[in-house]
Length: 489
Image 1 (tube, rainbow, N blue to C red):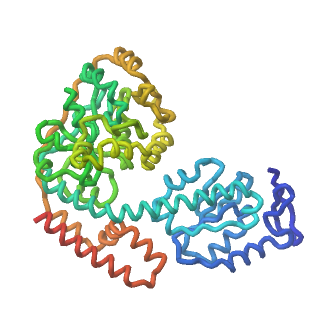
Image 2: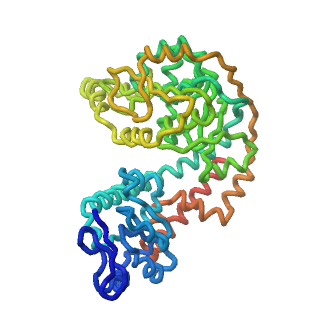
Image 3: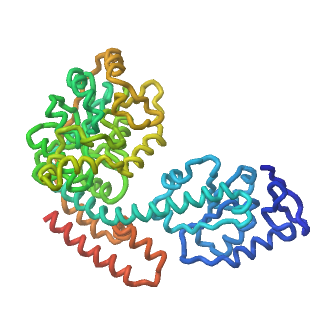
């Protein structure tokens, strides 16, 4: 599209696209002032973002009217980049075709839901198709942000309680003594694992094996001994997968937010994972405990990949990472959750009916799959593969290459012998006084409340005169403090 910048009737610059004006051809600055004067905000946002304001005449007036609010711009084309300086930040749509993903990756749920988006009217008409895509992405990302915020408000408290139990009951920790030079093999529990089980069993000494919690029973049943298990899920049912560790001395890498039965936690040798953010990280820092840096991710397989990428120097192999529904069982057997579900099977509610329902694609799998596709890692001399036979393949992970069992064996033969993996083991003694001191730190309290009650804080921004929200936060906070005191007692 041809963009023309020319003089308006009053001598100010104006702009047009294919002969159609983006600003007034008579008084473009006055037009921008009237636009902002007539702008009414439904709440006091933290940020205002305007879509394609062309010559940015509205920027100064937005700053004058809302001096405490950050302003940003979404550019549809690059022709107006020299007019960006008046905004606090710039987003170029034309650089991010998957705009919904971009918004979700670069803004927190709170940021999205406390931002007010506005459009420059002429741009909405002249860039009609782009405008539809951008505004649909904004709507969808905000809907998802609201859903995630509801989920987070529910789980944040659970994660905090898990973190408190972790510190109280964890007694033995490990950390790496040296860099891992072996190829890393990350075992998930998808059915695509099945054709590779015997190969992994025969060649397991060649790998640093990270077994995700849902695959622990499979590995143990088939004589595969992982170097490390990993769990990050904070829900109760995720803890069912860990039962097999009662009778096996396999170390486990886990975030303090993850759920683990207290009795088992006392027994386990743990590699504590620290995401470096939030309350759980703050609690860990009050203790004399050796932690390993890890990346927060929506799925444990994502955390495991980034973990292997950071601490291993060789190729990384992903196994059982189907990221799609399969026929029949959705996990390689045995699987603790499948075993629990089977107890409810009967003549009316049969196993076949239950498995049939499980074949319906889970929307969260698509989200996780998209994360792998959209976050390529710089691998340089090493490579990342997914082990996948054709009969199980339902998708592609983009930059991650799929290889068959034959390819896998060929690659194994090329791996030279590497040094043994050694861990440093330490005893851990919990100091509850430091945790309680942090819990009652008045400055930290505000920060903690925002994390624990994110939905309530967003609602308070939208409805600042509603004292009921403030009272609800305070009541819930006091209940939470008392429960933590009971955990630590």
